[in-house]
Picture (tube, rainbow, N blue to C red):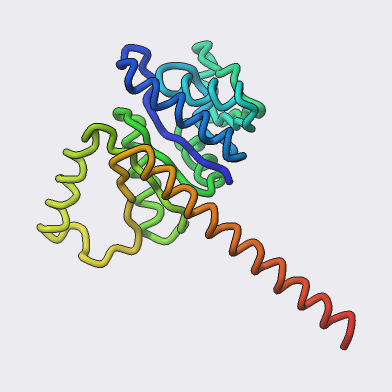
Length: 203
């Protein structure tokens, strides 16, 4: 499964947050998944990609030329995709992903998060977004979403909504459930195709 991770690129963040990144990268590798991320160095992006890469996971970095020009290309990628600008980066990452994870971050992470939600809301995709609310990091955002619903800016019955996880264990459980769902869909598709082929060969 291709897991797209959005997170901070700031080195000044606390060690507690960086440890989250390392655990995420290690889990992705141990479970046999692929990491898709922004292809640059710094902060949680370094921790997630380096740990996943060193643990043997495929790591796909999607990075704009402007960031490459600053010398921040991540060396912990098995594949690097260069794109023209930030919007192209977001689009490519959405295309590659089977699901999305938001770890703690700031403007860039929020931009990517809301881009995924907005695209899902209008039906461009049905891929789930999981947000790790580590130590209440995203609690103010959750309160703002609740206010938007209360004031009817967000409908009571949403077509697409992010899933907030209050712990790493909950996040990993959500990811595992989605992987199992994808596997069931894959097997069912293969069975349908095999049945159709058999019917064609034995009219």
